[in-house]
Length: 256
Image 1: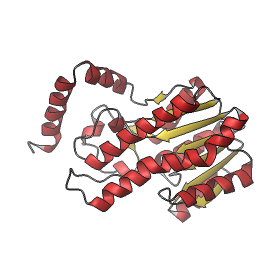
Image 2: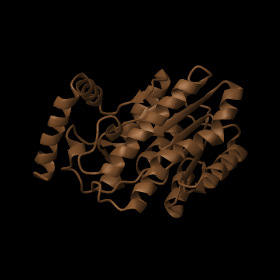
Image 3: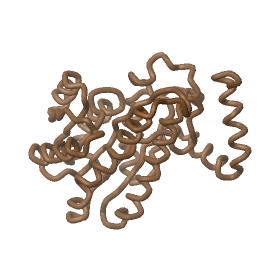
């Protein structure tokens, strides 16, 4: 699907990946862009830069997503593309507090569910639409120092798969974005982390990959192409892969 002429919604749109996507979609000729986030002032700045609409939104609340969709439709007509992009991260293992486990679930999984509930039926009725859900390479592989992040990003990939299975032949395309490290506020000062093993790309480079993959309507958006090879190694020999991840853990974290 081409983004030119489309009405697009992007959550997590105040900075980082969301901001870069809004700017790239605008450059590609999107008809209207609605950006959503909790940070009101930066969000307004992004919306102004793309002649779009800013809607302060907590993606962990379904009523906020419903409100977002309604305002985006009012401003730009039927929603053609919904990019569910918001994300959070906290380092730690099973000791991560329960409230952050729950928040990770709500932001990384339920926000995608709420987005689908808000727009997918109308897309099916029209026979056209695109859902882009941001996960992470951690959702295909793992994360050696952030259990809540890795687990909920795996769930995000799984949910995107179910959307593609159910709606992919009904005119609704689905892609899941799975990058490794990207230069954003979330990764600032973490250039020596395990996620940077294959280099750090800019959010603008990632946005270009998203546009290219959406043109081809492929399910996996992999700004770091090495991830596909790592997936193949993982499924070919799971035990060997786990041993390799343990070595990677030791390299970056020491012997925990």
